[in-house]
Image (cartoon, rainbow, N blue to C red; front, side):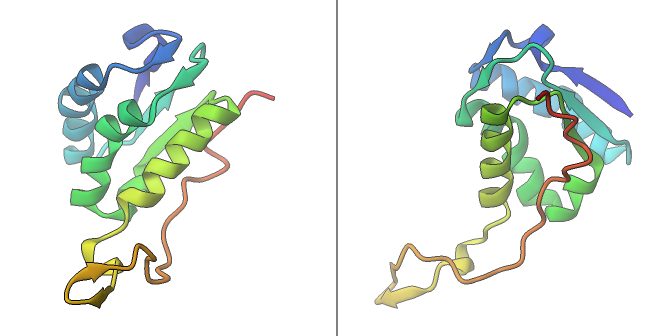
Length: 128
């Protein structure tokens, strides 16, 4: 398992989406391709933008499928950071055909009910 310490790489407020893309390309994707587990450690991170988390995770979830979340852990997340991670993990599992067209290709904005994988509670070790 590889451990990625977000505070050391980003700061107490993780917002740099370019840095997040580097983490994805240099650390996350190669580890997943090798079959390794990845632990994102958010110790000392007080906040993270959705764009940061999206740049770090979404492409991997979309290309590898929801099952990749079984190999990714998120530890030491405070509630706001945890919420951002859950939101990104949820929408990254959506596919274009999850949004049926109302008329002539116009989306309704309401996704079809689809069972999606949630990030595990046991992996969070969130701070209270």
